[in-house]
Image 1 (cartoon, chains in turn blue, cyan):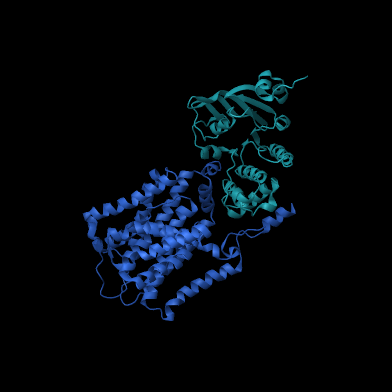
Image 2 (tube, helix red, strand yellow):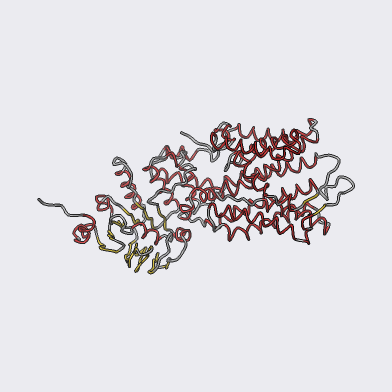
Amino acid sequence: MDKLLAAKSEPLWNTDKRIIFLISGLIVLLFALPHFGLNSFYLHLMIMIFMHAVMAQSWNVIAGFSGQISLGHGAFFGIGAYATSFLYVQYGISPWIGIFVGIILSGFAAILIGIPMLRLSGHYFAIATLLIGISFQIIFQRWEWVGAASGVWVPMTSGDSWFALQFHSSKMPYYYIFLVFFIITFFLVWILSRSKLGYRLRAVRDDPQAALSLCINVSNYKIIAYVISAMIMAPMGSLFAQYILIIDPDRVFNIEISIIVLLITVLGGIGNVWGPIVGAAILIPISEYSRIYLGGTGGAVDLILYGLILMLICIFRPEGLISFFPKNILERKKQR
Amino acid sequence: MKILSVENLSRSFGGIKANNDISFEVTEGTILGVIGPNGAGKSTLFDLITGYTKTDNGKVSFFDKDISGLSPDKISSLGIGRTFQKLKPFADQTLLENVMIGSFVKEDNIKKARDKALEIIDFVDLIEKRHHFARELSTGQRKRLEMARAMAIEPKLLLMDEVTGGVDQKTIPSLVELIKKLKKSGVTIITIEHNINIIMEISDNILALDQGKRIAYGTPKEIQKNEEVIDSYLGTVDAT
């Protein structure tokens, strides 16, 4: 009985102060970083890390939490990109509203795709999403209303504009916008992982049959995870479109987007809120630097490097790069 | 009061009649033991009652409500818990998390769900292992985990598939005590058991199956004397 009382008096979560310091320190550092004289390239690098970390976090929700391997997540990135650009170019609607439209459209698309597709299990779901991702690209290539293969060109404003979400004098505003989305997403997924929903999604991932015996409607929970995941992905497409101002189906519905989020998450650590961040922080610089030093011919070298790292990780660290960090800080509390 | 009634339940796989016209009733607050040789259709019967396998024919009623054809999650929501013969713990989660997933059924608040899970873990006598991952637990401990997890949904009826199977001899008495304790707490239990001494000890009634058919139903004493059961399952002791 005493043991029970002792167990009940334990804090619910790992209240290790180090983790609070780590997170607050990181946030302060990231907010202060541009003021240390980061040049345009480093700002770009950080923006790409934030963006890919959020995209990978999105993939982490469906694959890491609910166990469904989606190979077509680029579709939601593209929907987000098109929603903002198209609404702004056609109707003059601020991209800020476009971002929310993109989130909602992606959510609906995820429901429509998820209801039939999530009935498929394992490999079949993965293959089906791969084809869905590719078909989005093909549809947008032929859809005249949204610019078909030439895509949408967002007209440049004469100066910086918060309404049009365009900044030409410095990348700094983009840095902070991406950073805020990055932090919001981190906390959302953090909260999700500790919520009743998070527990139930992990149950669905670990053993759907057992989950059914605990009143969990497995299909519904898979769809919920898919929708949340899609809604996290969409704003990154929107912001990316505002960042480069030219979008076309080959760029925003590219299969590479679906693959890269998988690579980042698996390399960083799947099913762990820190995994996508660690993965993006290590892989995106590799990709950007290999492009710089190897020029046009280096287009695929980053992928070769990814492949190599992936092999090494699979062999030596199947839990991902996150496993190099002290377990008692980053993982759930365990006692022996 | 009748908690479960099974009428003319049948299910075939290919040409094999895994369950063939099985009928029985379970009274609230009792333990029904299900016995039979391998392949008698015991686990199929569990899958049919809990909705994991669709019935070809027949009807399952829970408190007089027809539940045949409902999905497993709906059936568990009504208050029918189960464990699995082939254990299905959430391997990458701790024992506490496993049980919490069950206690979330009746409790939305995380702290309350956690505390309730801890009480159940204490009930199954595994409190010290609460932060261990399920994959780190022994078979006997994982059986308790499954019982605890099923109890967490506060079932009125609990179906347990071979609780003592694959567990070392030393652990068995404590598992038997646990089943008795569960019954005392008011849960109605249907249990599949191969250990005939245990089934005789704990059951109020016994259902004997052979080749998918019901061959006997009655109290342990009646079953012990039933010739068909002796022939197909209990065997005879040669007096010579």
